[in-house]
Image 1 (tube, rainbow, N blue to C red):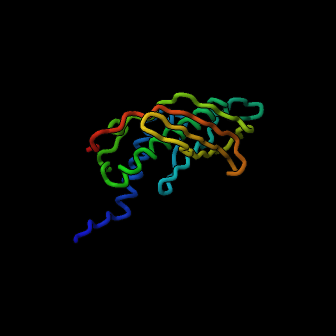
Image 2 (cartoon, one colour):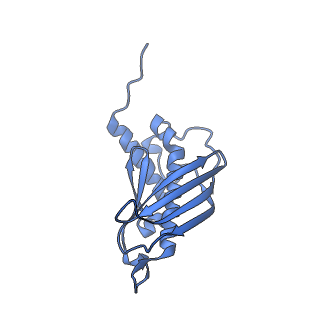
Image 3 (cartoon, helix red, strand yellow):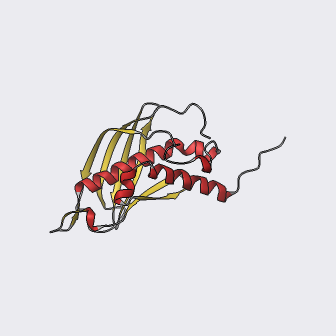
Length: 173
């Protein structure tokens, strides 16, 4: 019985990184405000580097509530799409050369998104992680948490509900 030889780790990592970059590129606003993602296995951490344009109240100074909400929503959408694509990326059904913002399945659409502002967003880098609570064929529920200097001291959190795009029938490429 012959077993298929596993792909080299570097090939798998490159495919994962290209898939993640294609997802982020599919959300132009993420690039506009500077959101990037760090990947460790299947876990994503979003990073919003501090920029003066993100300040809403210069007297405090504090991050603008809209920038915080956008950061959380983008983190939720990319995290949800990442989870949806994970099996196809891992199995190799989606190849590195097939990946671009145009070739990926459509992103989930926001139904509603509720943000809890827990404390002032300080003028420094912010981080966020999304946890998918439920993901079905048509609907998904996501919780996302954001912090700055200390993961245990959240400055914002949100819950969102999303309409899932139709499943792709045939593998890409």
